[in-house]
Length: 253
Image (cartoon, rainbow, N blue to C red; front, top):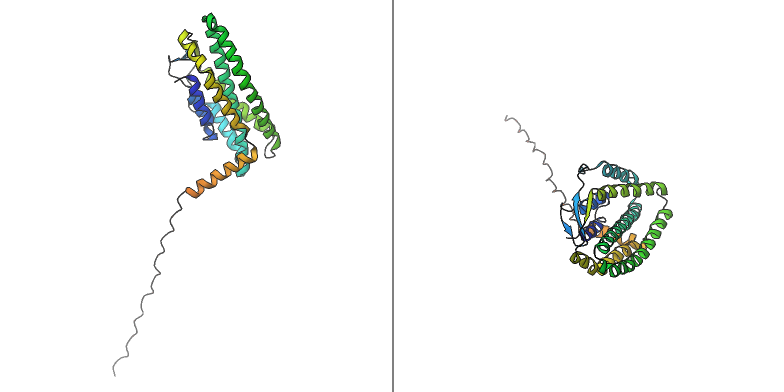
């Protein structure tokens, strides 16, 4: 499995559970040591850095701050916040994919000069298409931050900054060793159409109008409640019968 596809899986998992989104992102980033990825890199743990502990201090701190930020919000406010938060994580992850692809393109071009023009021309098209959607997604995210009134904008931005720090910690844990065979670079080139479409599709998901997304989330929650089995009513106990009172018979005369 390529590193790009692992990242795609991490993005999709972000929306499953907002509180452990970053933990899932971290898990998606892990690649077995020594695995050669077709886009031109082999992943190796950095020897002089300690392995990440679960949960990391940054993850614990982020979850605590998210719980504090959302604890007093009503359902609609909480949904709105996590729309912002998940959109930010998706944008940041797409940017990371763009950086990784760019690094692979540079390495392939350097070691395969005959492919350089074709690789760089395709990457230029790739970034032009993806960057346009990134700009639109960032503007939409920033508008959502300014439009809400349940938290200070700086508080929301602080949570997003914490998420960025945790993501960087995970990404820095892996060292990239370029693998630039002609076969690997040709594979990378052939995957550019697919990865471009996937990135644009993911970014497009952040551009759904807020009322539409809120209604969709509300409908999903209502459907989940309706599908949940109703608790069985407790069986009624039979009324207690009062003991019969025996009448004393009159003494015989």
